[in-house]
Length: 397
Image (tube, rainbow, N blue to C red; front, top):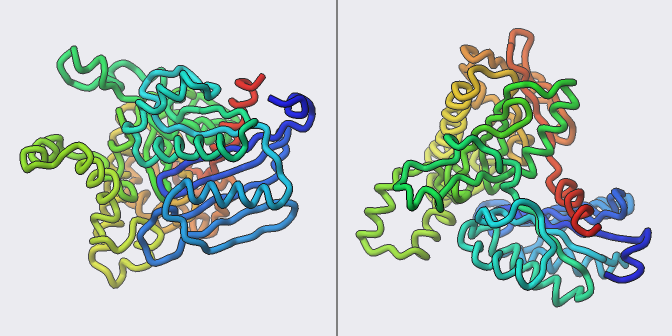
């Protein structure tokens, strides 16, 4: 690291690879210099991909073709260079480290080799993150790079929640890791601050335009989560199938499908995209078209059904429910989705105030529960990039 980087001018860029997005933020000692997001990266749908960015009091939005994450990252780096922003270090979100890491790491040849072996575990995230690491290394050769893992929040899941019912020789290898941990840790901290307490039982829903998951939290700890050994398990997602009978995979293998073909089908062609007949992989598109499109309605309803299924299951795991939290783009910006999820859940103590729900600001913590609700319902914006930055400061120190 350069002498300037060790001084007061240390600037850290964070890249946050999502299934269909790329978040980016540039910090200088906790001051946010640039913030933005590349939306609809690789998404097949009616609306175009675009980049939005806030810097130096300016907000810009540019529609541009973003068919893969490394292309989006290149646009971001070109923008930073052209506007005179230098970067001393770059942090990356890595979805799945395969249980090989207990926390974040500085990128070097040894850690890079392990990350490469983990690439197939989360093909929509890990491969893109590795490509961006290579891009950064060639673009800003003196910048240090570090990696923060999405599964650390779930590292102390109870044994009964992380173990698959496989032969013992396999069960030791294939265990539930869980994901979206950076988001859950951030939202949990904000919810605790807002409520003025931390000893509650909560179901937290990370509902994104790419990946989605549910997490049961008791006394500030993850006790169950819907994603598993890979990000494929759990809720229906934009192009991922979520929960699936393993017999289907066995039958597809018998029909001649190879590993790469199965990866493509289950990770890239299923979920909302598959259910909607290829109309869109974005729930926002489907929610707007489902009145006239039977397949879009089915995709929306199935997405809601799976979420409600997990809320009920996790209420049983927790032996009751105190708080229900919605976060990430879909969870924060689609009131119709929140309304559908909470419908007829009064038996759990969940009663949504429809007016509060319609008028909720996605950029601030909002209460959504009605007067008769025993469960507090919150919409809480997440900031995964700041969590990556905070861990990066410790690593770079």
